Image (cartoon, rainbow, N blue to C red; front, side, top):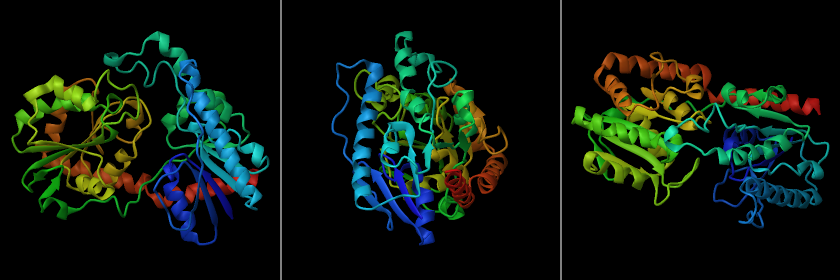
Length: 407
């Protein structure tokens, strides 16, 4: 079969299914993307370039749509080019979030389309308005509603949709949900797995060495920002560090803002450093920025307590990976997280808004070996039952067959 994938940051959410198709050695795979250095042997990567950004004088609510339409134009031009070269896909699979697929029907009107539907924005009940410390003014609500313009256009393309969690599916209007398949994502359980040996050797990260007898608390996010609870865990650290002198903390994440607004000046890391001052000992807390994936896995395998925090928003892959690695997870008690963690079974839930309570919950894990062992074992069992990438790609392949058969 001939596949055409589209995602502005290759390979995006399509890593596992693309690897699965390549391994079958019977498919032709073309991937349209904005230029980047990533590569998968067996995939023909075709770059496209967006010509310009949205004008600064445009209405704030129109800027995302303007950029999406420019991306749609660029993808359609690139698709026309590969069609002229004779490429006719059996299916187009892509992410609807950036508008790349909006004009693809003009190139291949009759080719089945399977679009990744990640999130439907709302002004209440989800991420917007969740954290009163960073309340969004009501004057910004029109801009939030306008962010669904691409979603709504995508739902009119006549294709099929998919989304990875029941919570994300539930963000969409009732009339749209019947058009979107629930396809839970998996992780590579052979790579993300517990390791008893990880606790027997020193681990060096960000210039800090964690000795075998020390307790390691980990936190991972793409960006160190309020959407992922960076301010909450930072405020929990003074309690945690005072309570146990053997605790070491590693906070992984970049200083760029992936979700939400940037601070008025500098980075969120600087903001929290200015707030907490000398309350956090830099010799015991490492913030190495973004790290290689293998370092990420080493941290999870060595972790004594892994903290995952988020607004009611899309759950990170790192939570799935932490469960697969057998981490004792302490997570914020929000609806999308409860889809993965049952309190006191395969993790512990704590209030997102209570740094002292978060610290106390982490200490429970560090001080109760029986509890920590049970959580770690149950986390891995949960992953084996629900997050196996082999089951995921099998279900994905079945959905692809269904979409192609539907025509």
